[in-house]
Length: 597
Image (cartoon, rainbow, N blue to C red; front, top):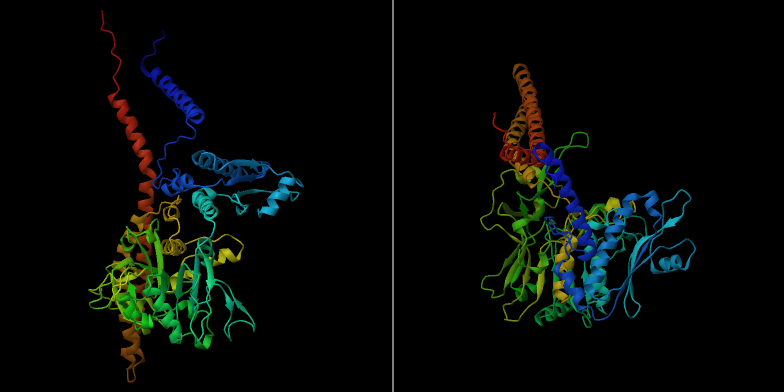
């Protein structure tokens, strides 16, 4: 036996550990059928309970065909790496399904039957080679009655949302018929003719981007309304979005549907910016409110069209300056609600991080109403209700923040599930006091879509809507999948410190602006003599210099905060490793030297 002592032992031990680690990985891969240790915060590499339940409940086989051109690896190595991830994930699903999800992998050669089948299935050929030769990287799922669902092309990084995309399609194939949702809307959610004065004659309004996820979850049926009422038969769910100027027979039909305990989603708004932006310019600032109308006593709640909620703590940042000299301020009428503002128990908000709203109202129970009103989304306690007229014209962040004081009634419910009524009927209604949250600009990057890119969500509004309609329609619960797959870990501490810095500097800035306005008024006042005018002009220059100094100080303070937090996080791991190495060296027993003869 060879004994190794002293400093020479450390390299030997490290090499031995590396060999043991490599051998263990090989053994687990060959014997453990995909075992792995998942140390990610959101368990990104572990199948969700919803996925395991769906695979266990598959009544009939669903064939999965991964169509992947192996020649992609020569020109796009990143896609080759992602293809291996997709293959491993599909292997895991197939193993879990116990034979009910057979997987095949096809490499379609040009002009082959496999390529014809891929094109017929709806896969997207992408020319990546110099000669324009098309390659494929998609998935075809086929159930027992030959219904198909496809992912046309996975793209460069599908792993972040892979499980949700695949399992949603599997769930769709496992259920023979989608629930049917009837839609009564005062907004062109599904598109339609543009109003007179908007665009060219005969122009069409584009559908809301959120119509895509909605149509994946339920079969949407637009419902025509007339003075005689509306036909609600054959529906599993009713959606009333911004119902304005509805005839009484339509209200009666909706009220009867709700009182029968049928599932209903209602969107009302004290100021619908989504409607205003799609109106002719001369009518843009006309009243755009919708109410519950005669449904108020049925539901036991009201939404006041004359009051709009603002939230100082959750306000979205807008540019109150110019493009050349931007001045980003929180606009409290547009808000990003997250964390404690989202119900932790409700299925509708499960897996969500952030839901955004624009000029919403507040849901208020009627006095003595016995109905159960469970808030789904609320404001923060730092909120207040203001007259709708203050937000229905040009946005004024500084004006809304001036003299702001939180309302003792805050937090206000923005969305709620109602399961009771004054008449004692078991209702099943989700009420949301806003319509702008489904508009593109509040949750998605519309410009990227217009460039041909996939929809890139900036908030969880679409997931919120799909969770709601699935919960109301009794569909399989996949809400836990929609919050998974976020590989980004935002520095929330930075946001908190930035908000604290702004609270300090914005107060000084506002005081200087008030003084600046007073000096300008004095300058323009009649009868001011030359000496006073000269003094006021000097004072004006001083105030403007002080204001610029405060604004520069704010920017520098914010940058210092970001730099300090980023550096501390980036250096934490190397520092921990260095300290561990020093600790090991300090406690390692030293070899004793032999005593002198």
